[in-house]
Length: 134
Image (cartoon, rainbow, N blue to C red; front, side, top):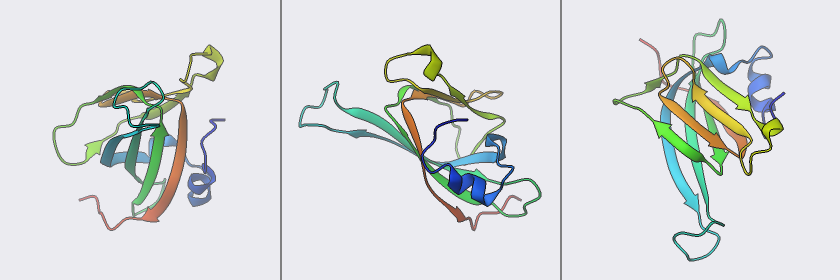
C-alpha cells in the first residue's frame, strides 16, 4: 500500500479507487519552498501542486483531486495545450531502493506526458467538478 497522506479522501469517494480513474490533469504548479533567503540552497524543496480530474467507474461526473508532491526531482511534462489526458497514471513505491529523498515515481505509463520522482505525496482535497467530458 502506498503511503500517501490523506489517501482516505480518495477511497472514501470510491472503495474501488484506482489511479487509472485519474483521467486528466487540469492544473500544474511548480514551486519552491525556501528554507532561507538563498536562491540555490540544498535545503530548499521543489514541489508540485497538481489538480487531476477523476472519474470513478460508473460515475457520470468528474471530481477534482488536488495533490501536492514534495521534494520533486527530474520533472518532465509534455503538454500541447488544454487538459492533459492521462492514459495510465502510475505511482511506484521506491522506498525499498533506499534512494536518498526519493520514495515515489509518478508517471503516465503509455503516453509518458508526465514523469517525476518525489519524497512524499499528500491529497489536499476532493470536490465535485463543474467540468464535463463532451
